[in-house]
Image 1 (spheres, rainbow, N blue to C red):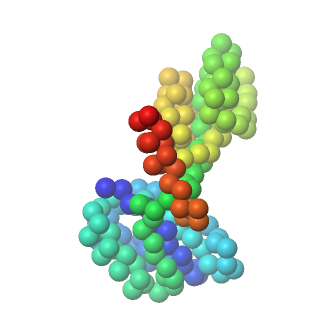
Image 2: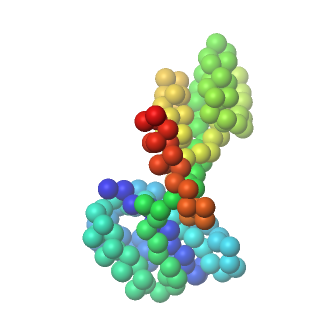
Length: 172
């Protein structure tokens, strides 16, 4: 099962390297990793997506706490969160295909950030499902390059679980 870990660390040289080393030594693959400054100066937030069962993730969390500069580790997999990703995608297309791509971009609220006679770069943000759907819709065009950030998230103070709302509304 995929787990999302939110990790607060002191913003010091070598922290990411130590975390990556811990995962490598235990043969864990980090599927997605996003790092940025947090709300407190000198603190960064890492959001990681990793595969493993609950017991394995619990043990990995304990190992993370043993590392220097780790402040807090939270498994937010089953907690209501707001999650987002960013995708930049460059596609090659001809003039006839351009309008179709623009229509797809409108549906997904994507931005055209660069355009040339035979190519276009699009930017879209959203939850991982939206990003995957957008990428799937553009698959029939010649994709030149893709850059995807990986998931970032914050826990919902409201405790409203949008995933549960989506499931419940589709069952009605």
